[in-house]
Length: 222
Image 1 (cartoon, helix red, strand yellow):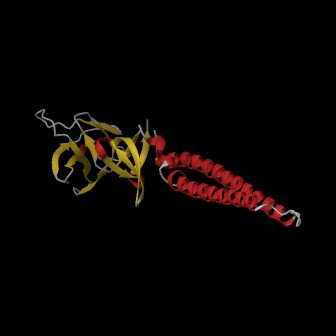
Image 2 (spheres, rainbow, N blue to C red):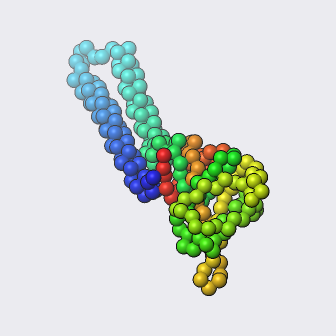
Image 3 (cartoon, rainbow, N blue to C red):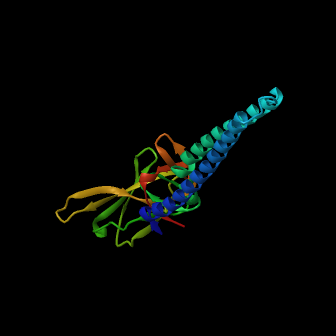
């Protein structure tokens, strides 16, 4: 498992390589365009006044010039589009698809156990796991005993019945030494199925159609 900072650093290297390649292609295309323009200008300046370039030949030259200019503009616009999509957005997260992210965003439950991160609990003996459904309503409370850094949440009640399929989020109510309680979110793992570019930047599509912003992710694992 890697944390988000190390994952972002690795993706930054890929983004940097892409940007370098893009600039190289743009520079090469621009150089070819400028060379063509210089050749055409030189040809016109040095043509024989007694035998000037015929109209049809000159028209062909101008058409070629126009075609090259349009190609340059097309390449620049395409490079800009790719830069927006890959250099600073979707591309750097595309290899997250198929992997699991740790997030405080609601995650999909379909009967299979979910992995919950419990590594920040300081007093597990006095902690309660609270489960909320997709509408934010409390649907389950579980008294925790000693738990490792990660626990498997089965989505079952004490009588063995299972919660219905849907989106769930979690929080811990932990008792302090003075008897007071503090509540905080518990992060869960969910598999990434896609990446979308939204008005707020890249957003991960999670199992079951859920979603999570990049700033809602704290870790990444296979």
